[in-house]
Image (cartoon, rainbow, N blue to C red; front, side, top):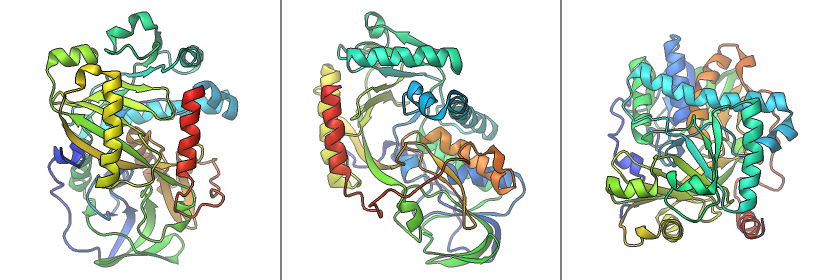
Length: 426
């Protein structure tokens, strides 16, 4: 079993990184080469800007290359709850932004010729309890009426057409959801930005940001420094560099995934007949999808942890394997080939944040729904840097610090216990 991301292990490394460190000047320095930073770099380079991307490790090597491989539209939260809290008009605007994110991923893949197995497979949200099905049905009725007619309920009697398990009580299907190979997409996005003229530096963590004039900054890494007219932070939960303001607002939460050995078509046809992106309604969520080479990828929260390392990932992987076999008993003797973890950049309300503070632009906090929103917001932030702040769907959201939190998530075990209790009683 490999203790590494399946996506990163099965995609060739980025071949167009600039050696050494940054020098001179740039129109824009983008900090972080995940989907946000790479999408922004591509959009800015298309505009003719001189763009430099500084990545602490490898291209798409953090959350962008360690996620569950889903590109689903829709909220992490219940639609009815969002409409009640934000107002129907605003909730619908944000819902459509998530739709636009999936469309943006699809259009970039087509325009840049990125071969990453993109498919609109749909998202199936299955009810772990009968009451959960009723809540999903209320949300689906409102969504179909207000913002997303491409949704429908699947009763328990028809659920075997979608998933080969007796564990669930029906589900909601959202047709627009997509799946792709995250490693191939990340590398393809980076190569597209490089072809357009963006300079991408790997292994260049930003260790100092010094404002020199207006929105201009001196940006320093261990290998060099560069002066930028504008800086975009696309760093997520990075614990490197002078980002204390961000760290008080984002909680790093571990997410963990295992991947089986390749399965036969016949077995996958029993387990996931339509190859949907499937997720359940628990707080300790489980989710399932298939890989291009017929593996079953099974992920989830497993534990509320703020770390990802081989020991932590292995512990979580064992929990996930037990959950996978409980849902799909026929996989009891199936070999697990990959086990890995990643860090989700969670905000307190599980909504992204993007904007400008003290001359620094930022977009992050996707809270587990980042593949498409990161790509979308990278392109949007390219417009914001060009003076079109009104295009930012998150522009009016304030972002207060989390009380008592300074970057070390001491409270995660307590949060985990609370959500485990909720899964038992609700």
